[in-house]
Image (cartoon, rainbow, N blue to C red):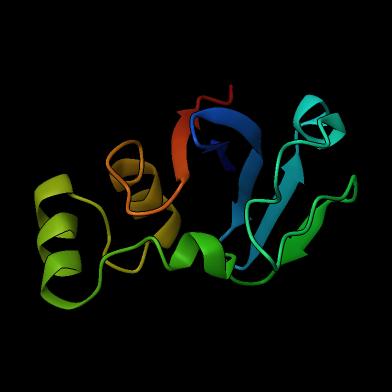
Length: 109
């Protein structure tokens, strides 16, 4: 199991967890959820106290990943399997992303 802290405009918004490559969970942080001035991180992950579950990496996160030659180069340089979407997201979306979303890895013991 791997997990990432999800930030929107630098503010902690929730936790994305990969149970395995076929099961992903996203849950909003309670403080972020309760702040009515904070927007949802995407239209498909509206602000809710429920836990979102998917067999695939949620589109808002998958679309942050590089494609084609750039993805291949990143996987080689970072020594991450090219099919490991979660690993590539953790390694490449910590800063300088195109949108408002950034991530920080959580170490789970």
